[in-house]
Length: 549
Ligand code: GH3
Ligand code: MG
Image (cartoon, rainbow, N blue to C red):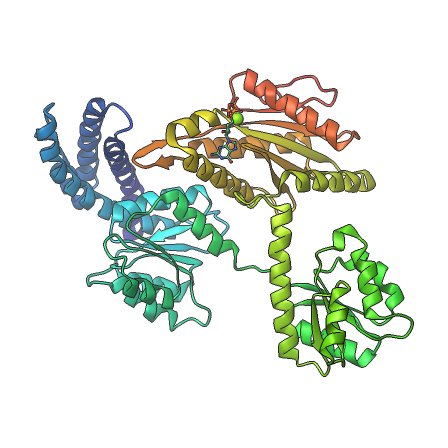
């Protein structure tokens, strides 16, 4: 390592101390602006923090931070107990803060690039004029395991996009020097990519139809105007980062003609769908069980039975009641088609089949079937499984664990003092927290875990192949992280905690397992909340701090 390298390393090392101190200053200022606690004490705290910042920055030769700090100290010196004078000094302090935020932000970008992190996702790029807000958003995003990076100029952003395509861009419509330069930048960016990057636009002052249209035309999925709520924003970003992976549709084809069946299979596979083809109608029950199709295509006329008869048999099973059935035939007599549809079919395709028409029909039917299914098994507020479906998943997992001899844990989670949150900040904020927590759980648990909304502010989690110790550790980690998350309600900010009871399945029924988890949960509530307890297998109460194994 050359001397220069070493010096640079040292500079970076000490630079981090300065930026950490700058964050303390920015955070304290934010607390004053939020007005949630006693501000007089906070001004003293801010003064001391700014003092320390200037000392550090001078020592490590970071002149921009030093001068921003000095500006803040000077403005704070004007501060007095008089509310009018307080108001008058605010702009000067804010100016110092803006400068400080700008320099701190740039440095923190360098750090993110220098250190490979353990975040799971491709990046979210943040391009805002308000650098302080960008910094705050990035911190919030990091809580949700998003790797977010902020940029200072359109060129920097374009450069980064060409090196690494982001999952989403958060874009100020005016990002850059000129009016609406943010939109212009996105327009230019999108021409370089085959599939557009989803963009969330923010606009403080321009909510006109012209601007909204232009934003939407260049890939703007959302348009926040005039204000943005961080919780809502993160929710949107989550949609675009998860929505990219659509599971292929599972299509069952029953056609006695091998050539026709093969033709359909090829057409469906080419369109990225999963096809399961049978030519013998007598194999239908087996195929339904083995493949659990989302859409069924039936040939109308086959030897031995007709498609309509098969449809009736399928519809006699409750769980297949809403699976779309599409008939296939050379029949173009409309009244015969209508008759066939009345016997449990949803659509009709006439031979010879145009593959494009086939694929479009499957897509439409599939999408609709999925959204109907989601309505049936999911909770509309959070998108998690509803109570009934969670219990049926628990039954399934229990029978799987019984067969394979694997372990299984069930967790009941309940938000602490949720009634108080609703009462203090309003029901919509309560709803937002429920959605926030659902997202948090989805991101931090495995794909194979099942998360349900059990009732109001109660959630249930099924952890297959997990022993009690691991379940406790994972859930407790999530509990700790969630409790650190700042929730916003207008200018106020606060934190939310939850309590959990974990029970390991020990051969009992789903109901008994739920009851044990519930009792463990209530032992936490009795002991002060914000903790995880594991129900001992013999069902003696046991706090989380003592390991059950
Ligand atoms: P504890 O810590 O003991 O669990 O106290 P708590 O206040 O969380 O529990 P309590 O059962 O007293 O209150 C639950 C509250 O949750 C009452 C109800 O209004 C609220 N709630 C239930 N469902 C919803 C919902 O969908 N949205 C919102 N915003 N609130 C809900
Ligand atoms: Mg509660």
